[in-house]
Image (tube, rainbow, N blue to C red; front, side, top):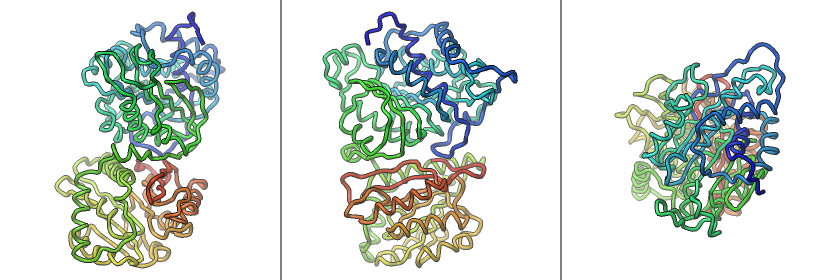
Length: 548
């Protein structure tokens, strides 16, 4: 793979060609609210021009060659790109049909600000070229899908240099949360800050290519340590730190990568926890080296590495305070329930993230950023832990009104007294129906009036029939909002602690396979009594979907 005659920027363009030629126009509700980049298209000339891969590739390379890129070093493994990317990945990408944006996350602690954003800039140049050259359009003059470029990095001190990089090429750096206009051909969104703070709420819908990069100084790999501490004075980054930040990026963004989308890890040490993350998944490997891996995402399976969960997942103080109140109520009444969501910190974390997303999106969609109402619907009240988590977001002073609608058998002894406590505290914001949800949930529409569920949790009867009946009733009763976030507790591969978890997952998958639900992620816990949980969306068949 020694290719001294090949220009680095040519190889980079070939790599970025993966994302610029992935054309898929169908709509998809998964992921996260973002720039309306998926809805804005560039209309080509009405005259028929045949797609020409060679001409298009040359046009992109020429466009990049005319720019002044400070391209002395790169996070990519260039030796891999001539063979793998140019001849394999680009060809596969052009033959695919995939909607979504390009997202690059630079997790390094910058030792040279001029090296940041180069790949995203080349992606933007390539995207602009594809939109403007008729022979780059593979879809016979159907409007070309428009993509946004998202670049996330950690160093505030590099903002000026990164903006200048795009400004010199006349790209518009726009607010990720603001509206777009038709005059913006390739919107550029910059996000600055620690990955664990900025990425969970990143407002991007669908991702066609996710790149996680850690541009290493020359000494990074010279000692063959594959993740040891660098000897560069400006940065001291262990492989464990790289892995930690990479996992934060993966947990925030991987579920938003489309099935068939591309993931590239560059300069990222594939340690045990990253390998654990992908253990249950199904990926088509495209390239691999000691410090570079790229693959196609084939399903939504994710395993939660125990060490990462224990060290990195933290629960919001307002939720822990609500649980402390609940614990006191249990002491005052009776403490008798079957498990609870608090024993799975990552599941609790996802519930919390989902609430943040729904609140923000409801405010935006209603056009009222001061007040919003969120309706949470759950089967299986149990000891009240998830209900208290959701109700902790009720903050009328901040204009956040949360309604909880629950359905429960009243089987555990804690259910009734805790329900009374919550009714006393939350009044008309708390509603609970006793009885078998297979029967009571059918009247949900009459019970809820004109209100719809923005977030749904299926945690009732732990059997395939229980999952199927609850999902069917939520959907058929007409109370599930288009694009509503849906969680299914304990729907996961078999584990003796939940003997019917596998058949529960089968019940969930029936709705995914019949397009009644969109699968976002199937999370698996390797070391907890709970085998895992699933996350999905109600298809956004009507306008203004909630997105997760």
